Length: 243
Image (cartoon, rainbow, N blue to C red; front, top):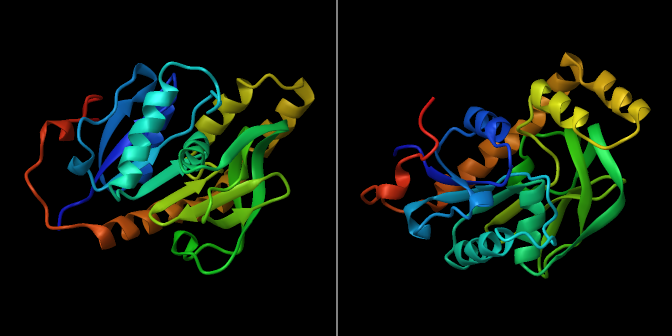
């Protein structure tokens, strides 16, 4: 069986970091869509799964591309496509399923400890207390009806699952370059920015690499659901081009 075809809904206005990081971490044939330009796949069934990336916006903002993205994701969920949301993607999936997303009134940023619960396959091989890079000021305050909370810390819910949909608030895809650039772009006190930068070390990055297993575990889940392959359509041509 060939690698799964995954639609990556890139919600970053400056998408290069997302493109590099997800191509490195996902062992799959990725087809990227710039949803900030209202690009979505023409047909759900051309893909084996969907990944929704992070973004600098809030899911409740009145941006002209958010509602079409949410609507497409809802259709993909209804069609039974497995989905994984990261940070903003986690929040969008929760919102699309009837959960609630709100401003935290504070900012979580930097390498932080998170705890997962139970035996979810998404966290297979990951210690119950693990390290990951976080950067968000919104949170899923109420998970979707019927969803299971998989991980959290003292700031917020950090993972949930409902049926074939998974969301993680943290960033398992980040490398140290991304972590530094994102941190420097935040409107926070200089002292706090420096504190976060001081924590972006090879040692902390090495600890956070354990969390990257969520990608492998999710793709294993996708493989479990795959049907006999059909002919590849035009959407399988990556509009971003090959590396």
